[in-house]
Length: 349
Ligand code: DAH
Image (cartoon, rainbow, N blue to C red; front, side, top):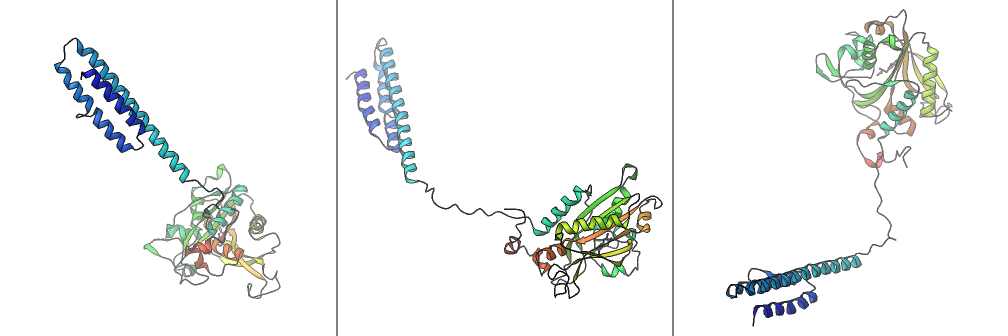
């Protein structure tokens, strides 16, 4: 049989075989057996050596044609087989759109952060800037500049963790007052700041004490600031957090960094001031400390007390959250139990 006939035969037998194949492996076997190194077309081409030189081009071009046809048929069949497999998979994997969706577990900001964010928004709205101080603070800013010299009894109530003799974990947010007073350029306008953050005390942890908790300090220093400004500001903030039904009471108190100093109470939300266990039968609940910034504090930061004065306040965020939501144990804030934390979805739906 001459080579051209052999080539035509290969073509005639292989093409139907390819079309009948439903399997990629089998398709590959066909490819190897025809086009591979030991395949039938390769063998036929080897026979060209023995041909007349005139015959070779004809046989060569037929061989190319047959090879191209078979290659194209294999490629086509491969696509057919793959498409069939895809269709079969799609049919088998039908999605039941009526099944209920898996619930998406969405986190919520920590309740402490919710109160912080809320207060920040409120004070930013009144033109305050939010400042950020240092959790590891020096004694000078934490105590001395706030009119709490060494051996002052107020230091006893704020014993803390010392990193070095004069470097400590801040016991309150008031050091940021001193820092801002030192840094502020009063020719550019008043100083109105809040400073929220983590503070530390050497406390034994129980339901109402934690060695670490959150405070927010606020301070306004300008010309002609009076206690009426302090009162109006705090009333506005307290009504925002606890509701406008709350009565507010200013009670004389003592803080080294303010004079006069006050403690601020709200009428008990549980009994509306009649007296109950929540307010220890007094009708009032203490929510924060405040006062008119002591001249010693201003002078320690180089501020001219003949021209400038103002007020400051400090509030406990944990305490605010406990009062607002009736939480009875401060340690719940720090245990990271999602069953507790997820109760405070706040404004988030
Ligand atoms: N620094 C005080 C504390 O931690 C809170 C405080 C009270 C801050 C009165 C003030 C203030 O600015 O005027 O107990």
